[in-house]
Length: 121
Image (cartoon, rainbow, N blue to C red):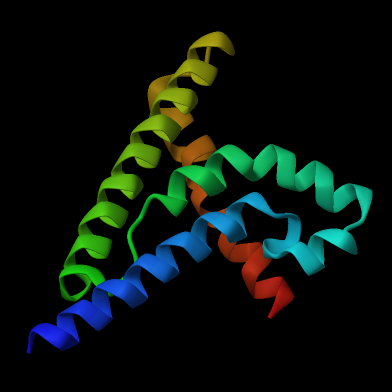
């Protein structure tokens, strides 16, 4: 029983390390980084803070996946608050009513990724 937990912890630690390596390298690995184009580097630099932030989410090997679920849920909540504050600030700067801001900016921001995902599929 204890051996299984030790193996799971070891696998979790290895996966955790790999998450951070994938976040740091362009394309996710050293080999992909060697073949990266300038646009890949630009996008990597822009996304690096987000990649590192979400690499903090522990792998599913810890606590039967509940730790991963809880931390991911916390991260989603933080990003949701951040997006709400940015939309509110933008609405204030552009003198748009809060209702219009909520209906247009936030709705478009949540629907646009789905549109791109559908287009690429």
